[in-house]
Amino acid sequence: MLTPQWLDQLRSRITLSTLIGRSTRLQKAGREYKACCPFHNEKTPSFHVNDEKGFYHCFGCGAHGDAIRWMTDHQGLAFMDAVKELAAEAGMDVPAPDPRAAKAAEKRDTLHDVMAAAQEWFVHNLSGPEGEAARRYLATRGFDAHTVQRFGFGYAPEGRQALKEALSRFPQPMLIEAGLRIEVEGRDPYDRFRGRLMLPIEDARGRVIAFGGRILSKEKTDAPKYLNSPDTPLFDKGRTLYNLHRAAPAARQSGRMVVVEGYMDVIALAAAGIAECVAPLGTALTEPQIEMLWRHVEMPILCFDGDAAGQRAAMRAISRALPLLRPAHSLRIVRLPEGLDPDDLIKARGAKAMQDVLGEARPLIDVLWEAERDAQPLSTPEDKAGLKARLMDHVDAIQHPDIASLYRRELQDRYSAFAFPKRESRWEGGGGKPAFQPRPRSGKWQPGRPAPAPSSPESISRLTARYEGGGMRDGLSAAVLAGLIRWPGLLNHHAEALARTAGLDPRFEMLIDCFQTQGPLESPQWETILRENGVESPRSSEYSGFRFSFLGNDSDPQKSTEELTQAIQLLIERPVLEAALKAATERHEREFTDETFAEQQRLRERKLEFDTRLRQMATRHAS
Image (tube, rainbow, N blue to C red; front, side, top):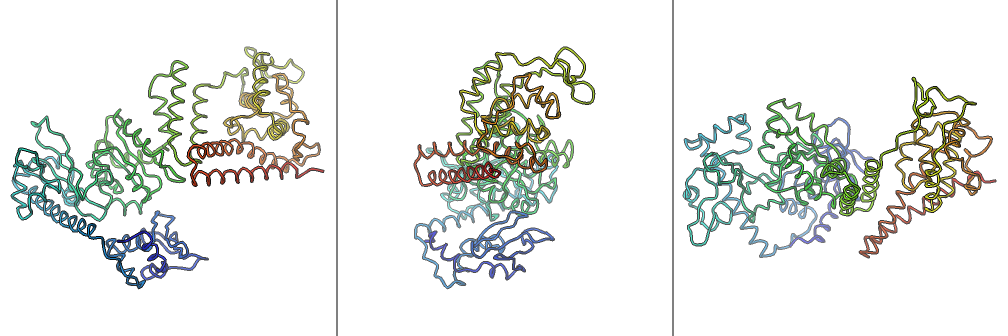
Protein backbone atom coordinates (compact mmCIF):
# COMPACT_ATOMS: atom_id res chain seq x y z
CA MET A 1 0.00 0.00 0.00
CA LEU A 2 1.35 3.43 -0.90
CA THR A 3 1.41 5.38 2.35
CA PRO A 4 1.99 9.16 2.48
CA GLN A 5 5.31 8.46 4.20
CA TRP A 6 6.48 6.18 1.39
CA LEU A 7 5.46 8.72 -1.26
CA ASP A 8 7.31 11.50 0.60
CA GLN A 9 10.43 9.31 0.67
CA LEU A 10 10.09 8.72 -3.07
CA ARG A 11 9.85 12.46 -3.76
CA SER A 12 12.87 13.17 -1.56
CA ARG A 13 15.04 10.78 -3.62
CA ILE A 14 14.19 12.46 -6.92
CA THR A 15 16.04 15.62 -8.00
CA LEU A 16 13.20 17.51 -9.60
CA SER A 17 15.35 19.77 -11.78
CA THR A 18 17.08 16.70 -13.24
CA LEU A 19 13.76 15.06 -13.98
CA ILE A 20 12.24 18.13 -15.63
CA GLY A 21 15.50 19.08 -17.32
CA ARG A 22 15.35 15.97 -19.50
CA SER A 23 12.57 17.53 -21.58
CA THR A 24 12.69 21.23 -20.66
CA ARG A 25 15.68 23.56 -20.91
CA LEU A 26 16.28 24.99 -17.42
CA GLN A 27 18.41 27.98 -16.43
CA LYS A 28 19.93 28.40 -12.97
CA ALA A 29 18.41 31.37 -11.10
CA GLY A 30 19.76 31.59 -7.55
CA ARG A 31 18.54 28.59 -5.59
CA GLU A 32 15.95 27.78 -8.26
CA TYR A 33 15.78 27.00 -11.95
CA LYS A 34 13.59 28.80 -14.46
CA ALA A 35 12.35 28.13 -17.97
CA CYS A 36 9.65 29.00 -20.46
CA CYS A 37 6.65 27.06 -19.24
CA PRO A 38 6.18 23.66 -20.93
CA PHE A 39 2.42 23.82 -20.23
CA HIS A 40 1.68 26.99 -22.23
CA ASN A 41 3.33 29.13 -24.87
CA GLU A 42 5.32 32.08 -23.56
CA LYS A 43 8.33 34.17 -24.55
CA THR A 44 9.70 35.10 -21.12
CA PRO A 45 10.37 32.46 -18.44
CA SER A 46 7.74 32.22 -15.69
CA PHE A 47 8.18 28.50 -14.88
CA HIS A 48 10.28 27.86 -11.74
CA VAL A 49 11.67 24.64 -10.28
CA ASN A 50 12.72 24.48 -6.63
CA ASP A 51 14.68 21.36 -5.62
CA GLU A 52 14.71 22.26 -1.92
CA LYS A 53 10.93 22.43 -1.73
CA GLY A 54 10.41 19.73 -4.33
CA PHE A 55 7.90 21.47 -6.54
CA TYR A 56 7.55 23.38 -9.79
CA HIS A 57 5.30 26.38 -10.37
CA CYS A 58 4.39 28.57 -13.32
CA PHE A 59 3.42 32.13 -12.48
CA GLY A 60 1.86 32.49 -15.91
CA CYS A 61 -0.62 29.61 -16.17
CA GLY A 62 -0.61 28.35 -12.57
CA ALA A 63 0.75 24.85 -13.34
CA HIS A 64 2.04 23.43 -10.03
CA GLY A 65 3.15 20.07 -8.75
CA ASP A 66 5.85 17.65 -7.61
CA ALA A 67 7.73 14.87 -9.36
CA ILE A 68 4.70 12.57 -9.53
CA ARG A 69 2.47 15.36 -10.83
CA TRP A 70 5.08 16.14 -13.53
CA MET A 71 4.97 12.54 -14.73
CA THR A 72 1.17 12.47 -14.85
CA ASP A 73 0.47 15.96 -16.22
CA HIS A 74 3.43 16.44 -18.57
CA GLN A 75 4.44 12.90 -19.48
CA GLY A 76 0.84 11.62 -19.58
CA LEU A 77 1.37 8.59 -17.32
CA ALA A 78 -1.21 7.08 -15.03
CA PHE A 79 -0.52 7.63 -11.34
CA MET A 80 0.76 4.10 -10.62
CA ASP A 81 2.84 4.07 -13.80
CA ALA A 82 4.43 7.37 -12.74
CA VAL A 83 5.15 5.99 -9.25
CA LYS A 84 6.70 2.81 -10.64
CA GLU A 85 8.94 4.71 -13.05
CA LEU A 86 10.15 7.11 -10.36
CA ALA A 87 10.64 4.28 -7.86
CA ALA A 88 12.82 2.39 -10.33
CA GLU A 89 14.93 5.52 -10.81
CA ALA A 90 15.20 6.04 -7.05
CA GLY A 91 16.05 2.40 -6.34
CA MET A 92 12.93 1.81 -4.25
CA ASP A 93 10.58 -1.16 -4.24
CA VAL A 94 6.91 -0.36 -4.74
CA PRO A 95 4.95 -1.87 -1.83
CA ALA A 96 2.66 -4.76 -2.66
CA PRO A 97 -0.91 -3.51 -3.04
CA ASP A 98 -3.53 -4.24 -0.45
CA PRO A 99 -5.53 -7.27 -1.72
CA ARG A 100 -8.84 -5.53 -1.15
CA ALA A 101 -7.64 -2.40 -2.96
CA ALA A 102 -6.32 -4.56 -5.82
CA LYS A 103 -9.68 -6.28 -6.13
CA ALA A 104 -11.51 -2.93 -6.19
CA ALA A 105 -9.10 -1.61 -8.83
CA GLU A 106 -9.66 -4.73 -10.94
CA LYS A 107 -13.41 -4.20 -10.72
CA ARG A 108 -13.02 -0.57 -11.76
CA ASP A 109 -10.95 -1.60 -14.76
CA THR A 110 -13.63 -4.07 -15.73
CA LEU A 111 -16.39 -1.45 -15.38
CA HIS A 112 -14.33 0.86 -17.57
CA ASP A 113 -14.56 -1.81 -20.26
CA VAL A 114 -18.35 -1.88 -19.85
CA MET A 115 -18.64 1.90 -20.12
CA ALA A 116 -16.37 2.02 -23.18
CA ALA A 117 -18.50 -0.62 -24.89
CA ALA A 118 -21.71 1.24 -24.03
CA GLN A 119 -20.28 4.48 -25.44
CA GLU A 120 -19.29 2.76 -28.67
CA TRP A 121 -22.83 1.37 -29.00
CA PHE A 122 -24.51 4.74 -28.31
CA VAL A 123 -22.33 6.48 -30.94
CA HIS A 124 -23.16 3.75 -33.49
CA ASN A 125 -26.90 4.19 -32.84
CA LEU A 126 -26.74 7.94 -33.49
CA SER A 127 -25.76 7.39 -37.11
CA GLY A 128 -28.43 4.71 -37.69
CA PRO A 129 -32.13 5.05 -38.60
CA GLU A 130 -33.23 5.18 -34.95
CA GLY A 131 -30.96 8.16 -34.30
CA GLU A 132 -32.74 10.49 -36.72
CA ALA A 133 -34.62 12.41 -33.97
CA ALA A 134 -31.36 12.87 -32.05
CA ARG A 135 -29.58 14.15 -35.16
CA ARG A 136 -32.41 16.63 -35.80
CA TYR A 137 -32.13 17.92 -32.23
CA LEU A 138 -28.37 18.39 -32.56
CA ALA A 139 -28.94 20.35 -35.75
CA THR A 140 -31.31 22.73 -33.92
CA ARG A 141 -28.56 23.37 -31.37
CA GLY A 142 -26.18 24.35 -34.15
CA PHE A 143 -23.53 21.75 -33.24
CA ASP A 144 -21.36 20.88 -36.23
CA ALA A 145 -20.01 17.40 -36.99
CA HIS A 146 -16.69 18.16 -35.29
CA THR A 147 -18.41 19.15 -32.03
CA VAL A 148 -20.68 16.08 -32.16
CA GLN A 149 -17.69 13.80 -32.66
CA ARG A 150 -15.44 15.57 -30.15
CA PHE A 151 -17.92 15.34 -27.29
CA GLY A 152 -19.04 11.81 -28.17
CA PHE A 153 -22.77 12.28 -28.67
CA GLY A 154 -24.77 9.09 -29.07
CA TYR A 155 -28.30 7.73 -28.92
CA ALA A 156 -30.06 5.22 -26.62
CA PRO A 157 -33.01 3.53 -28.41
CA GLU A 158 -36.43 3.04 -26.85
CA GLY A 159 -36.25 -0.67 -26.07
CA ARG A 160 -36.13 -1.69 -22.40
CA GLN A 161 -33.70 -4.54 -23.16
CA ALA A 162 -31.78 -3.07 -26.11
CA LEU A 163 -28.55 -2.34 -24.21
CA LYS A 164 -28.58 -5.71 -22.47
CA GLU A 165 -28.78 -7.45 -25.84
CA ALA A 166 -26.08 -5.26 -27.37
CA LEU A 167 -23.68 -5.80 -24.45
CA SER A 168 -24.55 -9.45 -23.87
CA ARG A 169 -20.87 -10.34 -23.41
CA PHE A 170 -20.98 -8.60 -20.00
CA PRO A 171 -22.95 -10.21 -17.14
CA GLN A 172 -26.11 -8.40 -16.07
CA PRO A 173 -24.89 -7.67 -12.49
CA MET A 174 -22.00 -5.73 -14.04
CA LEU A 175 -24.35 -3.67 -16.22
CA ILE A 176 -26.41 -2.87 -13.11
CA GLU A 177 -23.32 -1.92 -11.10
CA ALA A 178 -22.19 0.38 -13.92
CA GLY A 179 -25.54 2.21 -13.69
CA LEU A 180 -26.64 1.18 -17.18
CA ARG A 181 -29.47 -1.08 -16.01
CA ILE A 182 -32.00 -0.63 -13.20
CA GLU A 183 -32.94 -3.49 -10.89
CA VAL A 184 -36.25 -3.21 -9.04
CA GLU A 185 -37.47 -5.86 -6.63
CA GLY A 186 -40.20 -7.98 -8.12
CA ARG A 187 -39.58 -6.80 -11.69
CA ASP A 188 -37.19 -7.66 -14.47
CA PRO A 189 -34.21 -5.30 -14.78
CA TYR A 190 -34.44 -2.76 -17.59
CA ASP A 191 -32.24 -0.22 -19.39
CA ARG A 192 -31.83 3.12 -17.57
CA PHE A 193 -31.46 5.23 -20.72
CA ARG A 194 -34.17 4.88 -23.37
CA GLY A 195 -35.09 7.25 -26.20
CA ARG A 196 -32.46 9.77 -25.18
CA LEU A 197 -29.64 11.74 -26.75
CA MET A 198 -26.59 10.40 -24.91
CA LEU A 199 -23.48 12.21 -23.75
CA PRO A 200 -20.50 10.51 -22.09
CA ILE A 201 -19.18 11.87 -18.78
CA GLU A 202 -15.44 11.33 -18.52
CA ASP A 203 -12.88 11.40 -15.71
CA ALA A 204 -9.69 13.49 -15.58
CA ARG A 205 -7.98 10.95 -17.85
CA GLY A 206 -10.73 11.03 -20.48
CA ARG A 207 -12.23 7.62 -19.62
CA VAL A 208 -16.03 7.24 -19.72
CA ILE A 209 -17.34 6.83 -16.17
CA ALA A 210 -21.02 7.81 -16.56
CA PHE A 211 -23.60 9.12 -18.98
CA GLY A 212 -26.06 11.95 -19.27
CA GLY A 213 -29.15 11.59 -21.40
CA ARG A 214 -31.59 14.19 -22.76
CA ILE A 215 -35.11 13.08 -23.52
CA LEU A 216 -36.26 13.64 -27.11
CA SER A 217 -39.94 12.71 -27.05
CA LYS A 218 -42.26 15.58 -26.13
CA GLU A 219 -44.95 13.07 -25.17
CA LYS A 220 -43.12 11.82 -22.07
CA THR A 221 -44.05 14.75 -19.85
CA ASP A 222 -43.58 12.72 -16.66
CA ALA A 223 -39.96 11.80 -17.44
CA PRO A 224 -37.04 14.05 -16.39
CA LYS A 225 -35.64 16.18 -19.21
CA TYR A 226 -32.04 15.25 -18.28
CA LEU A 227 -31.04 11.99 -16.64
CA ASN A 228 -27.57 11.20 -15.30
CA SER A 229 -26.02 7.93 -14.22
CA PRO A 230 -26.28 7.16 -10.49
CA ASP A 231 -23.20 7.08 -8.29
CA THR A 232 -21.17 3.96 -9.03
CA PRO A 233 -17.69 2.64 -8.19
CA LEU A 234 -16.52 4.77 -11.13
CA PHE A 235 -18.69 7.86 -10.74
CA ASP A 236 -19.17 10.22 -7.78
CA LYS A 237 -21.18 13.17 -9.08
CA GLY A 238 -20.12 15.42 -6.17
CA ARG A 239 -16.45 14.87 -7.03
CA THR A 240 -16.68 15.07 -10.81
CA LEU A 241 -16.67 18.10 -13.08
CA TYR A 242 -17.90 17.56 -16.60
CA ASN A 243 -15.28 18.33 -19.29
CA LEU A 244 -12.41 18.87 -16.83
CA HIS A 245 -10.00 16.75 -18.88
CA ARG A 246 -10.48 19.11 -21.87
CA ALA A 247 -10.84 22.35 -19.89
CA ALA A 248 -7.68 21.96 -17.79
CA PRO A 249 -5.20 22.33 -20.70
CA ALA A 250 -7.24 25.22 -22.10
CA ALA A 251 -7.25 26.89 -18.66
CA ARG A 252 -3.46 26.75 -18.55
CA GLN A 253 -3.44 28.75 -21.78
CA SER A 254 -6.11 31.32 -20.85
CA GLY A 255 -5.52 31.55 -17.10
CA ARG A 256 -9.22 31.15 -16.30
CA MET A 257 -11.77 28.41 -15.69
CA VAL A 258 -15.49 28.98 -16.29
CA VAL A 259 -18.17 26.99 -14.46
CA VAL A 260 -21.60 26.86 -16.09
CA GLU A 261 -24.79 25.13 -14.96
CA GLY A 262 -25.02 22.18 -17.38
CA TYR A 263 -23.07 20.12 -19.88
CA MET A 264 -25.01 21.52 -22.84
CA ASP A 265 -23.80 24.99 -21.80
CA VAL A 266 -20.23 23.66 -21.76
CA ILE A 267 -20.56 22.32 -25.29
CA ALA A 268 -22.18 25.52 -26.60
CA LEU A 269 -19.30 27.59 -25.19
CA ALA A 270 -16.68 25.20 -26.53
CA ALA A 271 -18.28 25.40 -29.99
CA ALA A 272 -17.97 29.21 -29.71
CA GLY A 273 -14.25 28.98 -28.94
CA ILE A 274 -14.40 29.17 -25.11
CA ALA A 275 -12.85 25.83 -24.24
CA GLU A 276 -11.98 26.28 -20.54
CA CYS A 277 -15.50 25.41 -19.28
CA VAL A 278 -16.76 22.78 -16.86
CA ALA A 279 -20.08 22.01 -15.18
CA PRO A 280 -21.30 20.17 -12.08
CA LEU A 281 -23.58 17.23 -12.74
CA GLY A 282 -27.10 17.82 -11.54
CA THR A 283 -26.12 19.26 -8.15
CA ALA A 284 -24.96 22.56 -6.72
CA LEU A 285 -21.21 23.09 -6.78
CA THR A 286 -19.69 21.00 -3.96
CA GLU A 287 -16.69 21.59 -1.72
CA PRO A 288 -14.56 18.92 -3.46
CA GLN A 289 -15.42 20.47 -6.83
CA ILE A 290 -14.32 23.91 -5.60
CA GLU A 291 -11.01 22.44 -4.45
CA MET A 292 -10.61 20.76 -7.84
CA LEU A 293 -11.10 24.12 -9.56
CA TRP A 294 -8.52 25.79 -7.30
CA ARG A 295 -5.92 23.23 -8.33
CA HIS A 296 -6.10 24.75 -11.82
CA VAL A 297 -6.87 28.46 -11.26
CA GLU A 298 -7.07 30.64 -8.16
CA MET A 299 -10.19 32.57 -9.21
CA PRO A 300 -12.59 30.38 -11.21
CA ILE A 301 -15.58 32.17 -12.74
CA LEU A 302 -19.06 30.88 -11.92
CA CYS A 303 -21.57 31.72 -14.63
CA PHE A 304 -25.25 31.57 -13.68
CA ASP A 305 -28.47 32.26 -15.51
CA GLY A 306 -30.00 35.64 -14.75
CA ASP A 307 -33.26 34.27 -13.32
CA ALA A 308 -34.23 33.58 -9.70
CA ALA A 309 -32.96 30.00 -9.96
CA GLY A 310 -29.58 31.30 -11.06
CA GLN A 311 -29.50 33.65 -8.08
CA ARG A 312 -30.23 30.77 -5.71
CA ALA A 313 -27.53 28.66 -7.34
CA ALA A 314 -25.03 31.49 -6.88
CA MET A 315 -25.85 31.79 -3.19
CA ARG A 316 -25.52 28.03 -2.69
CA ALA A 317 -22.08 28.15 -4.30
CA ILE A 318 -21.07 31.11 -2.14
CA SER A 319 -22.20 29.32 1.02
CA ARG A 320 -20.12 26.29 0.08
CA ALA A 321 -17.07 28.39 -0.76
CA LEU A 322 -16.95 30.69 2.29
CA PRO A 323 -15.54 28.11 4.76
CA LEU A 324 -12.88 27.15 2.21
CA LEU A 325 -11.56 30.62 1.32
CA ARG A 326 -7.83 31.11 1.70
CA PRO A 327 -5.38 33.80 0.59
CA ALA A 328 -5.57 34.45 -3.16
CA HIS A 329 -8.22 31.73 -3.63
CA SER A 330 -11.83 32.76 -4.13
CA LEU A 331 -14.58 32.81 -6.74
CA ARG A 332 -15.73 35.37 -9.26
CA ILE A 333 -19.32 35.38 -10.40
CA VAL A 334 -21.24 36.56 -13.45
CA ARG A 335 -24.96 36.58 -14.08
CA LEU A 336 -26.22 36.35 -17.62
CA PRO A 337 -28.93 38.69 -18.88
CA GLU A 338 -32.29 37.52 -17.56
CA GLY A 339 -33.95 34.88 -19.68
CA LEU A 340 -30.74 33.85 -21.48
CA ASP A 341 -28.46 30.87 -20.96
CA PRO A 342 -24.97 30.79 -22.53
CA ASP A 343 -26.23 29.17 -25.73
CA ASP A 344 -29.03 31.73 -26.10
CA LEU A 345 -26.65 34.63 -25.55
CA ILE A 346 -24.15 33.36 -28.11
CA LYS A 347 -26.84 32.76 -30.72
CA ALA A 348 -28.45 36.16 -30.13
CA ARG A 349 -25.36 38.36 -29.77
CA GLY A 350 -22.32 36.30 -30.75
CA ALA A 351 -19.34 34.84 -28.93
CA LYS A 352 -17.92 38.30 -28.18
CA ALA A 353 -20.97 39.12 -26.06
CA MET A 354 -20.23 36.04 -23.95
CA GLN A 355 -16.59 37.04 -23.63
CA ASP A 356 -17.70 40.52 -22.53
CA VAL A 357 -19.96 39.03 -19.85
CA LEU A 358 -17.13 36.84 -18.54
CA GLY A 359 -14.87 39.89 -18.49
CA GLU A 360 -17.28 41.54 -16.04
CA ALA A 361 -17.01 38.77 -13.43
CA ARG A 362 -17.46 40.22 -9.95
CA PRO A 363 -15.80 39.36 -6.62
CA LEU A 364 -17.62 36.97 -4.33
CA ILE A 365 -18.09 39.62 -1.63
CA ASP A 366 -19.91 41.96 -4.02
CA VAL A 367 -22.42 39.30 -5.03
CA LEU A 368 -22.89 38.21 -1.42
CA TRP A 369 -23.61 41.77 -0.28
CA GLU A 370 -26.07 42.52 -3.06
CA ALA A 371 -27.89 39.18 -2.74
CA GLU A 372 -28.50 39.64 0.98
CA ARG A 373 -29.34 43.33 0.64
CA ASP A 374 -31.95 42.58 -2.02
CA ALA A 375 -33.24 39.35 -0.47
CA GLN A 376 -36.17 41.00 1.32
CA PRO A 377 -37.62 44.45 2.08
CA LEU A 378 -35.58 46.66 4.41
CA SER A 379 -38.22 49.15 5.48
CA THR A 380 -37.97 48.81 9.26
CA PRO A 381 -35.10 48.84 11.78
CA GLU A 382 -35.81 45.16 12.43
CA ASP A 383 -35.41 44.39 8.73
CA LYS A 384 -32.07 46.19 8.63
CA ALA A 385 -30.88 44.42 11.77
CA GLY A 386 -31.81 41.13 10.10
CA LEU A 387 -29.63 42.05 7.12
CA LYS A 388 -26.65 42.63 9.41
CA ALA A 389 -27.27 39.34 11.22
CA ARG A 390 -27.34 37.43 7.92
CA LEU A 391 -24.12 39.07 6.77
CA MET A 392 -22.34 38.24 10.01
CA ASP A 393 -23.57 34.63 9.80
CA HIS A 394 -21.77 34.37 6.47
CA VAL A 395 -18.61 35.89 7.98
CA ASP A 396 -18.73 33.38 10.85
CA ALA A 397 -18.61 30.57 8.30
CA ILE A 398 -15.18 31.68 7.02
CA GLN A 399 -12.47 29.54 8.61
CA HIS A 400 -9.40 31.60 7.70
CA PRO A 401 -9.07 34.24 10.45
CA ASP A 402 -7.50 37.01 8.37
CA ILE A 403 -10.04 36.64 5.57
CA ALA A 404 -12.90 36.49 8.09
CA SER A 405 -11.67 39.70 9.71
CA LEU A 406 -11.41 41.50 6.39
CA TYR A 407 -14.85 40.30 5.27
CA ARG A 408 -16.34 41.42 8.59
CA ARG A 409 -14.82 44.87 8.22
CA GLU A 410 -15.86 45.26 4.58
CA LEU A 411 -19.44 44.06 5.09
CA GLN A 412 -19.87 46.17 8.23
CA ASP A 413 -18.69 49.23 6.28
CA ARG A 414 -21.16 48.52 3.48
CA TYR A 415 -23.94 47.90 5.95
CA SER A 416 -23.20 51.13 7.83
CA ALA A 417 -23.16 53.16 4.63
CA PHE A 418 -26.50 51.61 3.66
CA ALA A 419 -28.27 51.69 7.03
CA PHE A 420 -26.83 55.00 8.22
CA PRO A 421 -26.36 57.15 5.11
CA LYS A 422 -24.35 60.32 5.48
CA ARG A 423 -26.52 63.23 6.59
CA GLU A 424 -27.20 65.91 4.01
CA SER A 425 -24.51 68.53 4.29
CA ARG A 426 -25.25 71.91 5.77
CA TRP A 427 -23.10 73.52 3.08
CA GLU A 428 -23.58 74.20 -0.60
CA GLY A 429 -20.96 74.93 -3.21
CA GLY A 430 -21.32 77.38 -6.06
CA GLY A 431 -19.50 77.76 -9.34
CA GLY A 432 -16.50 75.77 -10.32
CA LYS A 433 -14.82 75.80 -6.89
CA PRO A 434 -16.20 74.76 -3.51
CA ALA A 435 -17.73 77.71 -1.66
CA PHE A 436 -18.62 78.15 1.99
CA GLN A 437 -22.20 79.17 2.57
CA PRO A 438 -24.88 78.25 5.06
CA ARG A 439 -28.23 77.16 3.64
CA PRO A 440 -30.32 78.73 2.23
CA ARG A 441 -28.12 81.81 1.73
CA SER A 442 -25.92 82.16 -1.31
CA GLY A 443 -22.56 83.73 -1.94
CA LYS A 444 -19.04 82.69 -0.99
CA TRP A 445 -17.86 82.84 2.57
CA GLN A 446 -15.11 85.37 3.13
CA PRO A 447 -12.96 86.04 6.16
CA GLY A 448 -14.60 88.74 8.22
CA ARG A 449 -18.15 87.64 7.34
CA PRO A 450 -20.14 85.71 9.93
CA ALA A 451 -19.06 82.09 9.82
CA PRO A 452 -21.59 79.38 9.02
CA ALA A 453 -23.83 78.37 11.87
CA PRO A 454 -22.17 75.91 14.26
CA SER A 455 -23.47 72.43 14.83
CA SER A 456 -26.35 72.14 17.23
CA PRO A 457 -25.43 71.70 20.92
CA GLU A 458 -27.29 68.37 20.92
CA SER A 459 -25.16 66.87 18.13
CA ILE A 460 -21.92 68.13 19.65
CA SER A 461 -22.79 66.83 23.10
CA ARG A 462 -23.77 63.46 21.63
CA LEU A 463 -20.47 63.14 19.80
CA THR A 464 -18.54 64.32 22.83
CA ALA A 465 -20.26 61.78 25.05
CA ARG A 466 -19.43 59.01 22.58
CA TYR A 467 -15.88 60.29 22.36
CA GLU A 468 -15.35 60.54 26.11
CA GLY A 469 -17.10 57.32 27.06
CA GLY A 470 -15.93 55.09 24.24
CA GLY A 471 -12.26 55.12 25.11
CA MET A 472 -11.32 56.54 21.71
CA ARG A 473 -9.06 59.31 22.95
CA ASP A 474 -5.44 58.38 22.30
CA GLY A 475 -2.27 60.11 21.32
CA LEU A 476 -2.04 58.76 17.77
CA SER A 477 -5.60 59.83 16.83
CA ALA A 478 -5.10 63.26 18.37
CA ALA A 479 -1.76 63.76 16.65
CA VAL A 480 -3.12 62.75 13.23
CA LEU A 481 -6.18 64.96 13.71
CA ALA A 482 -3.98 67.94 14.60
CA GLY A 483 -1.73 67.15 11.64
CA LEU A 484 -4.63 67.06 9.18
CA ILE A 485 -5.96 70.37 10.46
CA ARG A 486 -2.50 71.82 9.95
CA TRP A 487 -1.88 70.08 6.59
CA PRO A 488 -5.40 69.81 5.11
CA GLY A 489 -4.13 68.99 1.63
CA LEU A 490 -3.56 65.35 2.67
CA LEU A 491 -7.27 64.86 3.30
CA ASN A 492 -7.76 64.61 -0.44
CA HIS A 493 -5.77 61.35 -0.42
CA HIS A 494 -6.92 59.78 2.84
CA ALA A 495 -10.49 60.96 3.56
CA GLU A 496 -12.16 57.84 2.17
CA ALA A 497 -9.90 55.40 4.05
CA LEU A 498 -10.31 57.34 7.29
CA ALA A 499 -14.08 57.44 6.88
CA ARG A 500 -14.06 53.62 6.68
CA THR A 501 -11.88 53.19 9.78
CA ALA A 502 -13.81 52.12 12.85
CA GLY A 503 -13.34 53.60 16.31
CA LEU A 504 -11.85 56.98 15.41
CA ASP A 505 -12.25 60.20 17.37
CA PRO A 506 -15.68 61.63 16.28
CA ARG A 507 -13.95 64.86 15.29
CA PHE A 508 -12.62 62.99 12.26
CA GLU A 509 -16.18 62.50 11.04
CA MET A 510 -16.90 66.21 11.25
CA LEU A 511 -13.56 67.09 9.68
CA ILE A 512 -14.19 64.75 6.72
CA ASP A 513 -17.77 65.98 6.37
CA CYS A 514 -16.54 69.57 6.04
CA PHE A 515 -13.82 68.54 3.61
CA GLN A 516 -16.24 66.66 1.35
CA THR A 517 -18.56 69.65 1.11
CA GLN A 518 -16.05 72.50 1.19
CA GLY A 519 -12.96 71.18 -0.54
CA PRO A 520 -9.39 71.94 0.59
CA LEU A 521 -8.53 75.32 2.14
CA GLU A 522 -5.60 76.88 3.87
CA SER A 523 -5.09 75.87 7.49
CA PRO A 524 -6.30 79.19 9.06
CA GLN A 525 -9.58 78.97 7.16
CA TRP A 526 -9.97 75.34 8.20
CA GLU A 527 -9.47 76.16 11.85
CA THR A 528 -12.08 78.93 11.66
CA ILE A 529 -14.68 76.78 9.93
CA LEU A 530 -14.05 73.77 12.15
CA ARG A 531 -14.08 75.80 15.33
CA GLU A 532 -17.45 77.32 14.39
CA ASN A 533 -18.73 73.77 13.91
CA GLY A 534 -17.54 72.56 17.27
CA VAL A 535 -14.32 70.90 16.10
CA GLU A 536 -11.41 72.21 18.13
CA SER A 537 -7.88 71.34 17.17
CA PRO A 538 -6.50 68.81 19.70
CA ARG A 539 -4.52 70.30 22.55
CA SER A 540 -0.86 69.40 22.78
CA SER A 541 -1.57 67.53 26.02
CA GLU A 542 -3.62 65.00 24.04
CA TYR A 543 -0.57 63.87 22.10
CA SER A 544 2.14 64.80 24.54
CA GLY A 545 3.84 61.43 24.13
CA PHE A 546 4.43 62.03 20.42
CA ARG A 547 7.10 64.15 18.75
CA PHE A 548 5.98 64.04 15.13
CA SER A 549 7.76 66.52 12.89
CA PHE A 550 4.44 67.65 11.36
CA LEU A 551 3.41 69.05 14.76
CA GLY A 552 6.45 71.32 15.10
CA ASN A 553 6.53 75.06 14.37
CA ASP A 554 9.48 74.93 11.98
CA SER A 555 8.38 71.89 10.00
CA ASP A 556 9.90 70.90 6.68
CA PRO A 557 6.78 70.57 4.44
CA GLN A 558 7.98 67.53 2.51
CA LYS A 559 9.23 65.72 5.59
CA SER A 560 6.08 66.59 7.53
CA THR A 561 3.65 65.34 4.90
CA GLU A 562 5.62 62.11 4.50
CA GLU A 563 5.55 61.49 8.24
CA LEU A 564 1.87 62.42 8.53
CA THR A 565 1.09 59.93 5.75
CA GLN A 566 2.89 57.21 7.70
CA ALA A 567 0.96 58.11 10.85
CA ILE A 568 -2.36 57.95 8.96
CA GLN A 569 -1.47 54.50 7.63
CA LEU A 570 -0.73 53.32 11.16
CA LEU A 571 -4.03 54.74 12.38
CA ILE A 572 -5.95 52.89 9.64
CA GLU A 573 -4.06 49.63 10.13
CA ARG A 574 -4.52 49.45 13.90
CA PRO A 575 -8.25 48.52 14.17
CA VAL A 576 -7.92 45.85 11.47
CA LEU A 577 -5.05 44.22 13.33
CA GLU A 578 -6.79 44.50 16.68
CA ALA A 579 -10.01 42.99 15.28
CA ALA A 580 -8.09 40.08 13.76
CA LEU A 581 -6.28 39.44 17.06
CA LYS A 582 -9.54 39.59 18.99
CA ALA A 583 -11.20 37.14 16.61
CA ALA A 584 -8.22 34.77 16.81
CA THR A 585 -8.25 34.92 20.61
CA GLU A 586 -11.98 34.18 20.74
CA ARG A 587 -11.57 31.31 18.34
CA HIS A 588 -8.70 29.86 20.39
CA GLU A 589 -10.78 30.12 23.57
CA ARG A 590 -13.57 28.18 21.83
CA GLU A 591 -11.53 25.50 20.07
CA PHE A 592 -8.19 25.44 21.96
CA THR A 593 -6.16 23.66 19.28
CA ASP A 594 -2.55 23.95 18.17
CA GLU A 595 -3.73 25.66 15.00
CA THR A 596 -5.76 28.34 16.81
CA PHE A 597 -2.94 28.91 19.29
CA ALA A 598 -0.41 29.37 16.47
CA GLU A 599 -2.69 31.84 14.71
CA GLN A 600 -3.25 33.82 17.92
CA GLN A 601 0.51 33.97 18.56
CA ARG A 602 1.20 35.04 14.97
CA LEU A 603 -1.19 37.97 15.32
CA ARG A 604 0.21 38.87 18.73
CA GLU A 605 3.66 39.10 17.18
CA ARG A 606 2.26 41.35 14.44
CA LYS A 607 0.65 43.52 17.11
CA LEU A 608 3.97 43.79 18.98
CA GLU A 609 5.72 44.73 15.73
CA PHE A 610 3.06 47.37 15.10
CA ASP A 611 3.49 48.83 18.61
CA THR A 612 7.25 48.91 18.11
CA ARG A 613 6.89 50.78 14.81
CA LEU A 614 4.53 53.27 16.41
CA ARG A 615 6.80 53.79 19.41
CA GLN A 616 9.85 54.32 17.20
CA MET A 617 7.98 56.80 15.04
CA ALA A 618 6.52 58.67 18.00
CA THR A 619 9.88 59.15 19.73
CA ARG A 620 11.99 59.70 16.62
CA HIS A 621 12.13 63.46 17.16
CA ALA A 622 12.21 63.49 20.95
CA SER A 623 14.77 65.89 22.32
